[in-house]
Length: 288
Image (cartoon, rainbow, N blue to C red):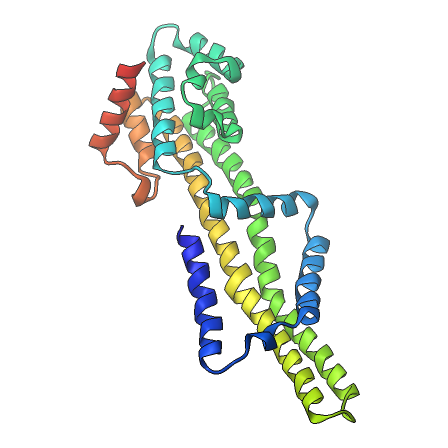
């Protein structure tokens, strides 16, 4: 995985360069300095954030390494589902049929045809809730779009809270490194009447504290926050696809053109061409 490759390059470059410059790795092992920096930063993060955000940090960190599942295959299946929904809506009595599906999606033959979507209940609920709005005959297209955008904005704000928490911690880590260095200098001053070697060891430990704070902040936690932000953007693309497709169809656009409007919201690496999308939808129709 690219993330692991990046970590290997990061550690190999910094610590490998240090060793090649005749540095001793054992000199960097300062457990008390690490305790001050990591423990202090973690404690501050716990103070600053509610439990939900702390749990979300752990969950999204796992996604960074294992993947969120929001990839081209997922988006293809999402387009399949939306097209099927729009086809139902255009049939005679389709509104009543769709209402039966969204009343209990867990038991719906329609939704159970798309296991990847069912495995992300928050996305499925987003679809179901907004299809309920579509079934409200008095709602105008611009009103529907405004309501969906407001929900998306709230969801994005909630999802990015772990990123903000980690970025704040990353910015604070160099400060905790300085704090550890200052405490190391205090210890050094207490040992001024000792042998020169002992004084040098204390100074080295203090400097390691500064290094660790900067390294963890800019080399580990900061990039981790950025990686989580990217994974969140891939998830938000699913919401954008849904919103654009539903709004387009509510405005009177045919099913395939409505799905195509949503397709255009995807990042290039996950966005099929219009011809590919037609083939995907046609293939699904044949299977069902």
